[in-house]
Length: 172
Image (cartoon, rainbow, N blue to C red):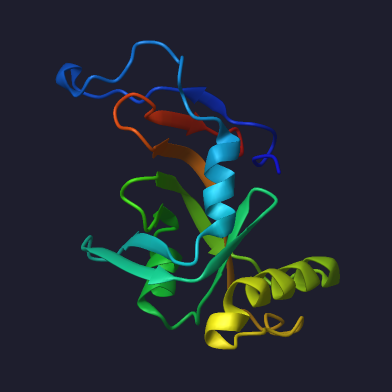
């Protein structure tokens, strides 16, 4: 699947000289590498900012579909209240060895159209039914509780610093 609004631009992040990040894009990871990990991940770490500026991090379930990360949660959760005050978030996969970090903006997804609701229900069930008997219905999100996140920038690596990569998206 493609990133939102096409494939992202790929380059290297700016880091201090002593880190050893290559000067060229040779060996940079393709966006498809990150998508594979985003689709396969079971837990995603969400970092938000409380209204008073303090950080908050919490793992949650999610599914990656067509360039968007969909996640659930009551508007009463700390994460949702933080997003309501400041929608800028960071999402990180669990691995510290095969790293995928995304920065961007989250927002309530609203009631998904029927085709998307079917895709989401199937994707969540495929991921979480066997381990947690979670099988959402297609109308589960009719009254809210579904959020969407599209990245603005992403970072990834599996062999730091040789393949540390930055992806920049054109979705805003």
